[in-house]
Amino acid sequence: MMDLSGKTAIVGAFESPRRDAPRVHPFALQMDCILGALDDAGLALDDVDGLCAASGDWAEGGGTMDVVELAEYIGIAPTYVNSTDIGGCSYILQAGQAAAAIATGLAEVVVISYAACPRWWPLNTPSFDPFVFPAGPGQYEIPYAPTLISTYGLFARRHMDLYGTTPEQLAQVAVTFRNHAMQNPDARLRKPITVDDVLASPMIASPLRRLDCCVVTDGGGAVVMTSRERARDLKKKPVYLAGYGAAVSRTQNSQIPDDLKTPAALSGPRAFAMAGVTHDDIDVAQIYDAFTITPMLALEDLGFCGRGESGAFVADGNLTLGGRLPANTDGGGLSSNHPGKRGIFTLIESVRQLRGEGPGVQVPDAKVALAHGLGGTFCSAATAILTV
Image 1 (cartoon, rainbow, N blue to C red):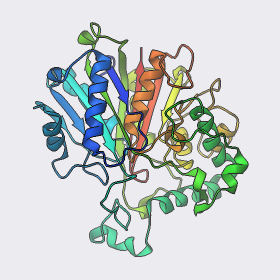
Image 2: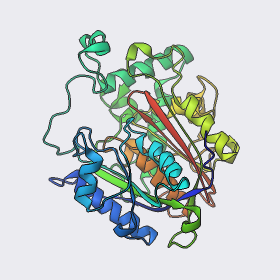
Image 3: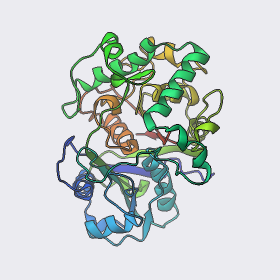
Image 4: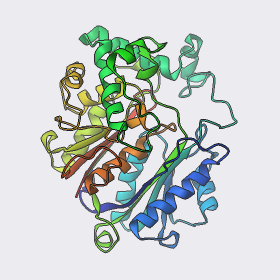
């Protein structure tokens, strides 16, 4: 793998404060976020020669040629484009690929952006599992009517059966991230909750209850990347991409490994090896949390705890401010925002933490951050390690 460590930096970041954007097209939100991220960097649209976006999914506004459509909308003609879509972690993957493009001279200033408006989008979401079709391999699973949430419920139930994980441990994930969200003025949900509140919320797909599930919001965000050399002369403290890894695995539920190992078991070690850091060096982490089971499996596959030990790891307070691994300091997808694909927000909050600009909970003197995302139902994963 090409060694990209420290050769590029995120120099601008912006997250839309909007959680409801009725009748606003997702491209309009992306435009706001791109301009905000460029302003944060002290750059302009004329400086941009690279664009990364994955906007062709439900409620994201684009079609088959989404990155071309977006470039047209914002009025640029980039020479480097990337519309790789592997689900929610696409933007972390795109950051790694943008770093390679910058390091090899294919681009100088690259914008990575995302927005979606599922709260009002007029087109219906597919009634079947959105990751397979009722032809080809999907024909053997569609008759069982899998949904996104029911599939995550299967993961959670399997984890309980294999490792003794409890509903209380799952609930503690939601409580921890809600405590962080309470201090973020832009978070969708800021009311304090307890483990009992989570357990009393309505069942959605056993064993996942309403408060085990992410919020559904409109929203968007963008980051700007450039070379290490150019980053030194820009407006804000550069945040360097020290390590990066990505991996894909499967889409079919029948192909889930018996021990629930996810592609994070591949993306994480690659990122750590490139960055040359250990788990003890990570000051703060932003880990995709579409459901409470999501970060628990990531903690195991990334190596922060052993297989089946994530329930106890969370229950011991390790993800809280002051814990071993403060995580999802903005409130995450469970409480702050989740327009559909949340990978871009893990990068944005990592940058804010390393700059000391966290909108709510701030880890003191953070120097190394981990941003991790997944795609689909643990079908793909991407991990980035950022430093200052």
